[in-house]
Amino acid sequence: MRFIFATVAALTACAAQAETRDITADVWVDNWFSMSANGEVVLEDSVPITTERSFNKETATFSVDLPAVIAIEAKDFKENDTGLEYIGTDRQQMGDGGMIAQFKDAVSGETLAVTDADMKCLVVHFAPAEPSCADEANPVAGEGACEFVATDIPADWTAPDFDDSDWPAAIVHSAADVGPKDGYDEVTWDDSAKLVWGENLKQDNTLLCRLTISE
Image (cartoon, rainbow, N blue to C red; front, side, top):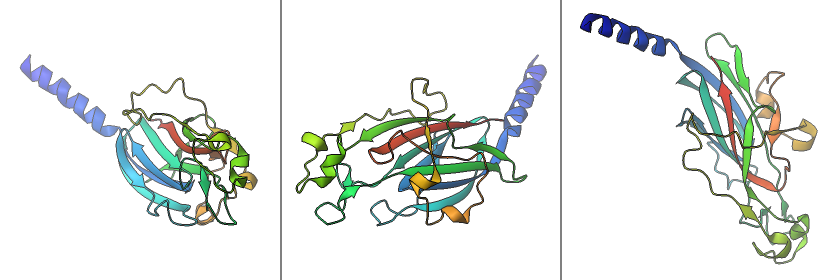
């Protein structure tokens, strides 16, 4: 019986090992992101979010057991909770975000997953409450048009077994609306890969997004 048990355990271990795949990810975000696979951070934007025009493309290859849950924290730059940038200058404005990613088998090149309307994205920072905040001479976070909504980030939101069933679906946006640049054109994007964000490109500042790479 001990011999049979050991054999079954060995077969189970081999089956689990066979599920491991090398995945190449291409990710472009305006402005910054951090990405986990099955709860482990595998890629982070190399350009600090405080860098002007910090959007860029990142490519990395990592190993992960499939199916794998990809969790991406995406941020558009804001100086403070008003949601504005260039505060106090003639360029004071609401910034706008955008994200696109694709995940391919590193050996075959087969596209296994992409950002699209099937993924889930929860907005955890929304500001300003009203676009007129950007026209104020002295915008103050939390006051009038410059109110904001911040949602607590669940501690285990990157875990594969986290329940995101109540999260809204990502919203697909056109390239004309997002205006992707600086690295975006360095990638040959799969036709199924879409630019996504929350419903509002300008007021949705921080998002938590999840998608699954199937076996």
